[in-house]
Length: 176
Image (spheres, rainbow, N blue to C red):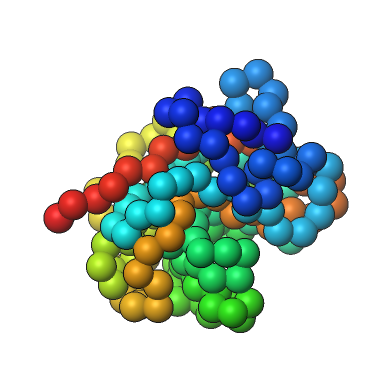
């Protein structure tokens, strides 16, 4: 379990009660499980940005991403990398819709930083190898008005044997 974040907010959703979530040194890990796993953090927010750095032991059928306006496991926006693309999608009532994507090659065992922002109806995402310069432009930008607020956090899809390691995470309110 992940417990409480460094800013004092408790991790929610699966991170508070699923044994696949653990701490290894100063990093959060998600391992020894198969399927989708959510780690959310409060408070509920309208316009926000999530940035995290993490790596995956493999990408074959796995992905790691940030969620915003997360209402429950079936209703959210997500931006993720899956080894071949940076994707933005939404899930409404359990039905996922891909809103936008761009090719992006991610390798197993390499740290990447993903920044996902939702302001009003604008959803934007970019990703880069941790330690390299952050791209100046958003790589995927789309418009959608399905969700107005919710939690921020992480959502992972893991195949059996995959380990996700999260080294940094932050969520901020955005005012523009």
